[in-house]
Image 1: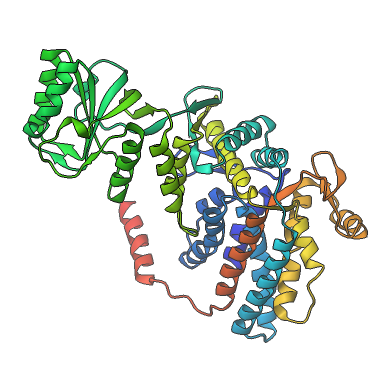
Image 2: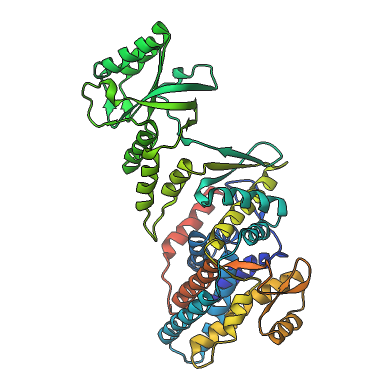
Amino acid sequence: MEEAIDMLCDTVKTTLGPKGANVIINKSTFSPFITNDGVTIAESIESEDKVINTILEIAKEASIKTNETSGDGTTTTLVLLQSIFKNGLLFIRNGVNPMVLKKELNDSLEYIVNKIKDESRVPNDEELKFIAEVSASDSELGKIISDAYLKTKNKDSVIIKEGNGVNIKVNHLSGYIFDSILASSYFLKDLKEINYNDAYLLLIDEYINDLECLSNVINYIIEKNKSLIIIAKDYDDEVINNILSLNIDNEIKIILLKNPEYGNKQISILKDLSSIANAKVIEKTEVVDTTFLGLINKIKITNDKVIINFISNKDVEGRVEELKSEIVLGEDNSDIYKRISMFTSGIVEIIVGEKTITERKEKKMRCDDSLCAIDSASSGVVPGGGLAFLKVCNTLDESTVGNLVLKKALLEPFNQILFNAGVNIDDTLKIIKENNYEVVFNLNNLKYENTQNTKILDPTNVVINSLTSAVSIASMLLSTTSIVVNEYANNLNKINEYTEI
């Protein structure tokens, strides 16, 4: 266990802080690339030893869990994990019961979390921008990310993806956007996109296998010489072919789109579009009249995307409130938040380009980290640079083994950040103590700053989640005495290797 923990954590912790190093990752599934993203490095570390590899997979869970809950703080998690495990192991070797230690660690954790929450405060926009810059390790990238986030106030409304160019591009997309699934590619033919103004919209929550049920609507469209967009679950081939023929013969435009979602999300997107176009959703393939039709202000259809521009109305405002009521705390609400943004502030698309694939991947990861950091920080921040842990550490007594173990662990993020930057740890800690933990050392300008004025801040939930994940995995490993592996499978792999040779 100790060997596995050191293999994992010693590799990752060199990347901690603004002066942390990079790591090259070379796996057969993709080209080698350089990164300082803790969870990405951790997930790539493996061992040929089956026992060590088993422990590695469990230890990685600490970093992965922090990434899922906060999107940042993954390296700090492993720094804490290593210290908690190694110091806890020393006490167990000296006779402390592992289950007693586990309980005391959890009791100490509860105290620490409450103290950190007491120190937390809500940041202003300037502080959020600086957090984004620090996390991206680039002021220009940080500004792009923070501007995008502050425009939407929602992480899920900022889409970051790799591009083919050498520069970073930012697209502000307004309107309701969803994936384009054309019933047939012939609806676009050789065109890159279709643009309609004042087009009619028909929403059907069914499979269309007969064109007769739509005859009233189609005749109306032909008579009015208007465009019609139909969205349904799917269409019979004969229906598709007949509509394509109508488009040619009558020089009108009827576009058949398939609902891009599945399950309950199919109904949700139809409700969204219904509020935009003031259309009724048809739930049965009965004869449809023109009262079911809605009207779209402007629509653009490409091979991969549909964008509907609309003017907000009472139906849209009501739909937004309905979506807000569907948000459930503790669950994944990303889809709901994204759709709310499409109704209100819009979507920001950031396309990351660079000269090489390696640079592009590394830059995108920094953008992802920056976005997660600013999103986490929006709900609360504490002094950064490991100071939040140092301050709590000073209040911990030594009455329990759990306190003793965590008291040492809480020093490690601060120590590792300074070590990676080549700064004297003892001298820096002495000055911070003399100032009653009210100053933080800024590694960017090598100056001490008051905690009330500094921009060196950490998101509160990142700090809490990194410690919580580390304690959870460390306490499980410390209370484990045996490991069972399938030796037969291990030997069989070796036999197969020899056979291939």
